[in-house]
Image 1 (cartoon, rainbow, N blue to C red):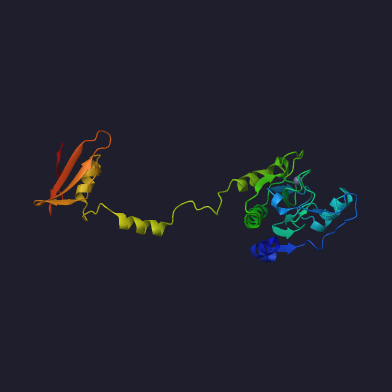
Image 2 (cartoon, rainbow, N blue to C red):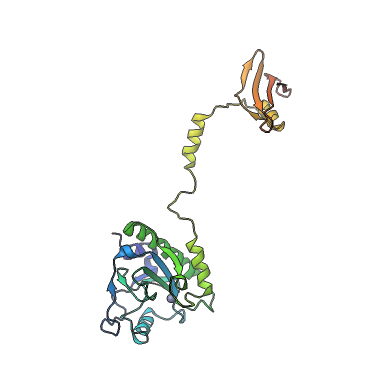
Amino acid sequence: MADLNALLSAEFGSGYQDLRATLPHNPNGPSGDFSLRPLLGLDILAVHHTVGPRDQSWKAIAQTHIKDRGFAGIGYHIGIRQGAVAYLGDVSQARACCRDMNHRVLCVSITGNYETMPLDAADAKALGRVAAVVQGWAQSSIGRKLKVLGHKEVPGQATACPGRNLLVEVHRIATLPDPGTPTGPDAPRLLAESAARQTLPLNRQAALLKRIIADGFLPTSPEFPFDSFIAQRAERLNDGKVRVYYVKAGDFGNVKFVER
Ligand SMILES: [Zn+2]
């Protein structure tokens, strides 16, 4: 089982804090304590905004969640505040961030109100990196990646969260190509393999080939010696016309052909 705290710490270094044990916690409140959930049930990474000011502390936000909403503590799992990342609530717990869906979501929240404020570049960058860490963790812990959604896109939610300006970035991150999937072949190996399979060696001047291409034909044989000439067979794709181009060695400016 990969350790999300260790992965976040390795990714963000001094820009990361583990606040899980230090934020206000009220397990005896009206909703009781957060419950454990099976990680295998996780399938959504939900992105939120806090709606408060960008510099509001996670401690103050946790207190609001306890006092005003009756939660057992801060509702989110991971926070991004002014470009810095904090682990707020353990991923093994169903926190309080998506109504009736808390057994399925891992919640990341950015301080600010993105219905009205533009998203800060440092926060956008941190979100992309958090999402990549979470997806790597999910892949190794539960064998698959999570679906990246804005809070309002999670089924059954009636909210403007995470705000239109953050939702655009959520969509950008959600549609990034998977870095785990190679987008092309291994170039050095492909070049080596193609060298071993080359069937059309050319003389340095490639006089025959240049003329064949210029005439709209394609070579269908290597160059071959014929009496005192060098020859090469070619064919036109659209009508199948066949020509054999030939030239005298050393007289490469004087390419001719016979045709069928
Ligand atoms: Zn939300």
